[in-house]
Length: 124
Image 1 (spheres, rainbow, N blue to C red):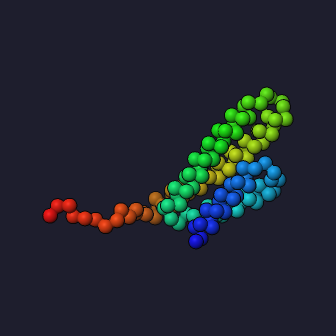
Image 2: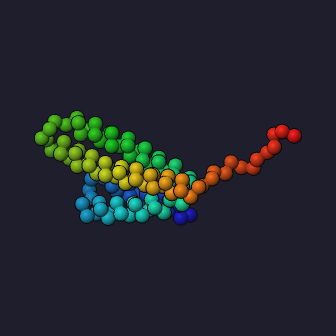
Image 3: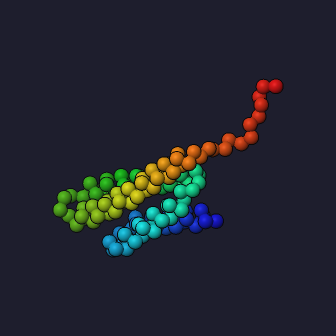
């Protein structure tokens, strides 16, 4: 149940951070909450897949926003707005990538073994 709530919170906080209506202080606070929720997921191998999927989605969003920014001429308000949005996306991406690295390092350092189920003797 805790994993479900943490994942739902991660999705919610990412959604807030992908918006453009947060002040700098609120963005900082939401980022802190996101990091805390990601840290809660650092105890199980299957959560690595979830966090990596979020990082992949984030990379796609960064590319999408970068392309949109590049579509606006320099000096326009549209480009300035897109630039601010891109900076927010890149900052969020840094958080997600760092979380993936920490989770991978934690899994590697704890010598987690992945269960492959019961072994059968194929040779009689």
